[in-house]
Length: 188
Image (cartoon, rainbow, N blue to C red; front, top):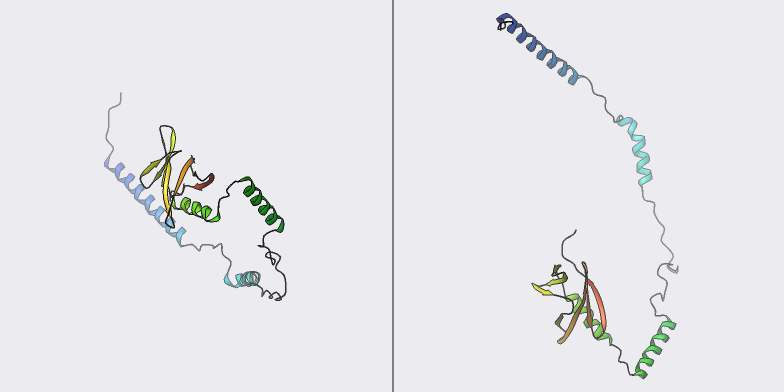
């Protein structure tokens, strides 16, 4: 069994000197490394001028000559938005047949009112309560089958909720249905 002998003071001093010399050498090497000239990945400005001039010529927008005033635009020809004569004839025949059959067709103002009332309904979201989707409209919970009342141009209208999905709801008024998106104001 060997007895424990502490290191001699001269041995500790030598270790300390070795550590100090090693640190000084590392510092000198790193400063010399940092002072050496670094090579850049960029070419010198004189050699870059030709590339920059070529890029400027390629990026320049050429002057486009104006079309003559009498030319026809193929994307918006004259009379494009005019109603099709066959569609007009079919619509008038259908209206006449409905009038003869005693069916009342919905007037344009009622459709506009329905659209306006539907646009005014802005739900803040959808929740599932008891397994049924429920719309949240101004703090009120509305389920499928519930009716909502609204006034448009001084006349009262009643619409019925017929369907609710995760991102849409469907309204019915006078036998006509309209599906609207649910805009919660946040992006997923």
